[in-house]
Image (cartoon, rainbow, N blue to C red; front, side, top):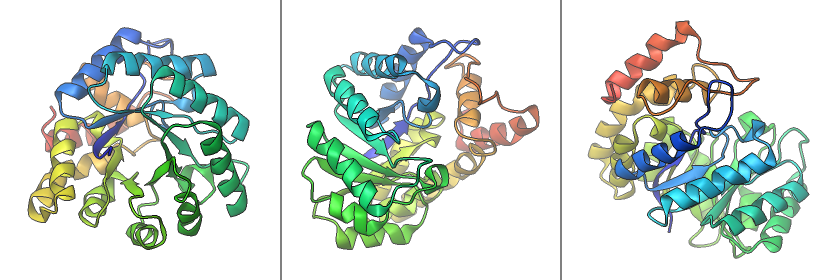
Length: 291
């Protein structure tokens, strides 16, 4: 079972936007040393929207190779094209990923039946554990608990990243889904409570900046140690909030660069963090004890 603090890893880049391969390798080592429980390669935070297919799969390969089996690697392989998602998922399996994370199709607004058939087709085409990813704030498409429950009956659809921040969604899916269906938070601000109520972890932006603290918080919350988990989460609250002062992953990349772990590289249409936002992110890092 994959559980705990699962980092939605940034993709290090050079100033011109080219992939920074040595930086990626160093970042993987940093996360393993800091106790990160699993790594998502090329999710939203990894700038999947602006990597071409060859780069996308290369990042997955590089992460798998560097991790070398020490923690699970989950490859982001979602698309608003079912054929493209199948192709990316097949490539991720060939690259050695342990599981795939598939965002609900964005922009084209499928029906619930369309969402069901999309994910069913990918699961049937590629025999690898698959995690659904519901983030309607980005996709303009909400994968409802009833649809998630239908999909939970497909053997290799093993869980869902629920990023609405609505804790009632956790309870609804727990009731409706197949036993053993894994629930992960996709919202750092509510992840502590999510795990205290039975979630198995968080696929986290904050973990890019404070991996050791996120690991400890998740471990305490999953074990039901409420007081400990909440005390740790209080130190992370500023990051949960201020890593979103501009669109993710802009603040996260700035913060990781401040830690000396990556270069100042990001791809258009994303831009480097505005100077006016820097003090808030720096203060949040100080609260978490990372600087």
